[in-house]
Image (cartoon, rainbow, N blue to C red; front, side, top):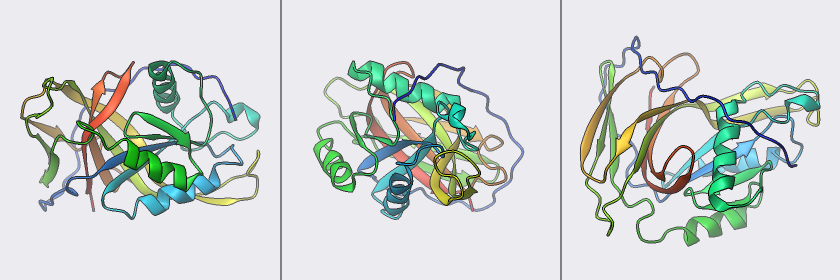
Length: 249
């Protein structure tokens, strides 16, 4: 399926209300971040959604679902869709210099795009994008009381490295009953669904620490957080440089 997307404003608000007492480290040294652009209105997407569930069980892979909204006009409004994800998919297309916008589309390490229901192609893309610099910056997260602490080590990249730091609020598993459209009558489960995306700051290649309140991270239905450093910018995203994931429960 192919479709039009449009830009929307990205939230950067950070707040606080939630309380989490324990201090827990994030998963260490993932080799890949994979992003699935999917839709409840796409009949080709359920196999790709299941693959995200499989990848989510691999501690060396951070797999994310980013439901898009541009198929809503076909008769079913995606209950998890966010226009920011449609904009992100379009930004990747602009960076590549093509117009390949479809579902299910998987972006691997910010640099390779493959059909999201082709597991062999996904595994190959993970291997082929593991070049110098990609996922080489150590990132960690700890939860302490009402705060999420993010630590980034200095880059060893030849050019020093630059990019942006983003924080995702994640629902690990979301069951959906689809009432209309191409998947009418189906009971589907979506894994590692991004429910909010917040820019933490810009990264200049050096070591640093960021402390984030939890209001926009930990709320009903949110049970994990992902932070990633990405080369480039929101408008022109590049390779993933580092990432970490931690449970909120």
